[in-house]
Each structure stands twice: as structure tokens, then as C-alpha cells.
Length: 258
Image (cartoon, rainbow, N blue to C red):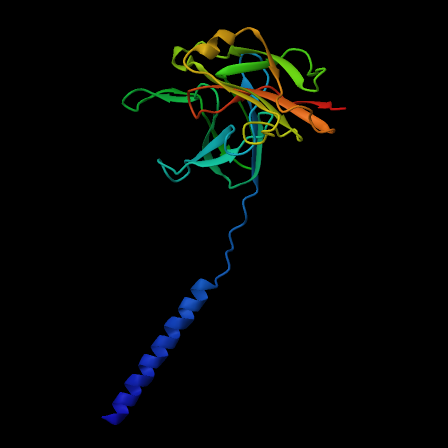
């Protein structure tokens, strides 16, 4: 009887050791899957001008949306951010079939009705192997265009001029202008997420007050007195209350402040 107990104890111990070894092996198994190395590159283009749609870097700018449809009809979206100039490039993507679109301060490429049925779909489906280059033509909510170059005033402030117009005639995206801002920065990565609040001039509008400025030459002037004696970048952003509440921009310009 004692011998049987000893044998059972030995078998139980052996089983526990075996299970521990299996657990250790599972936890330390080497991942043999290759790292993602395919590329999606391209741009978001204003269909009215043929120019790329300026944005800001980071989470407040245009983003590329990927839906991997190789194995799932309802995949979880993946995103990567556009660069400031409206181009995008991601070199760490797995080979697969993707439905690709862009989201930003422009009329959505994919639109639905009141019950969720898709009414417009300008996304692109690709089978990604190595590299895919995609260009999306969009209608920006607003266009912000420079008029001339920044001017240093006698009181050492700087004034710029712009013209802001609507980039779409779609009545669903004709909301009032809510903000027109002159951003000042010491880098070209200038925008609502990166500016010097000492000198930037931020203006919010109530109701339709901002709409009266559409199509006119607007003069915006820095605040806070003399700017630092270094290269200074200027950029104007404007937005309406639509979509992701993101800004439309012109390209940053620089002057060397005396």
C-alpha cells in the first residue's frame, strides 16, 4: 500500500514537472513571423487645384485608414498619420488585402445615410505586395492661400495676408467658419498642435461672423511685440464645425527676423 502511494506521488510529481516544462516552452517560444516590411505611400490631393492638402503632423491631421479584408469582413481599423504636406508613407505594413481611405478636413470619401447605408465610397482596395502608391482626390472644407509674403511692421510685429475660400459646394459641408488663426513657430512644423502662444494670433468666430471674410484678402498680425531674432515660420489655419474639427492650412513660410 505504501509502495502504491509512493508510485502515485512520483507520477504526480512527474506530471507537474512536465506541465511546467510545457508552460515554460510556450512562454519562451520564438516568434518566427517576419516583421512587416511592405509600404503604402501616396498623397491626398485637392481635386480643385491639383495640390496636396496641407495638414498638421500628429493626431490632429489627415490620417490613412486601413481595413484588412483578407480574412475578416468586419476588420478593426488601422491608422497611420499623413505628413504635413499632404503626402503619406508607411514602410511597416504586412502583406494583405486592404480597403484604404483617408480622413481629414475634407468631404469624407465614405458617406452613409441616416440608417447607416453607404451612399458614397471612394476608398481604394489593394492587394499589398511590396509597395502600393495611392492618390486620393478630395474636396477640402476650406482653401487657405497666401497673398504675398510676410511683412515686418515698424512696431516689430509681422503681418501676413491670405484669402480663404470654400473648397466644396457640397451643402452638407457649408458650416460657418469657427476659427482663423495665424500660427508662429520656430520650426516648419507649424500648426494648431505646435505654435508659440506668445506671438500667434488666434481668433474664434460666433455664428456666421467668420463667413463674411470668405473670398476677401485678410490681414493677420502677430501679437506680443518683437519676435525672437531667428528664423520664424508662419502659417494660417481655418476650420468649420464639421468632420473631425480639423484645420485646413496653407504651407508654412519663413522669414529671418532681424
